Length: 100
Image 1: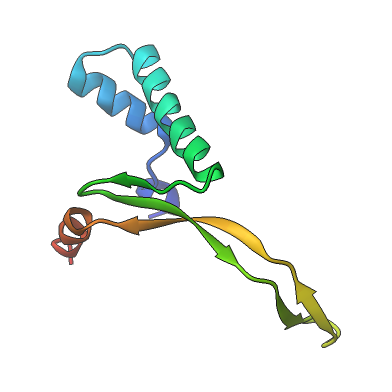
Image 2 (image 1 turned 90 degrees about the vertical axis):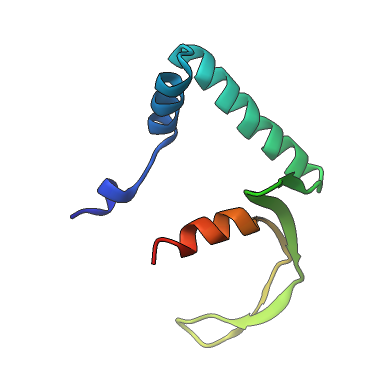
């Protein structure tokens, strides 16, 4: 079994939502892309995006720190950065736990 058999793409999601809702794939695609754009826009502005029961998207800030170049062992400064994170909500965690 390959990894691709366990991967769901945006295209797959659009297909399933279209079939389940009887809405055209074009319209579903517009809604999905709008949702993703809105999540991205809010994260860029440092706003948390909370989808109750599913989870929340946040931006974490990492301060600069000292590290080592793995090839030379020299000390280097790793720049501060912002990175998006996802925290699963209780309902999602419970649903996944049930699959053990």
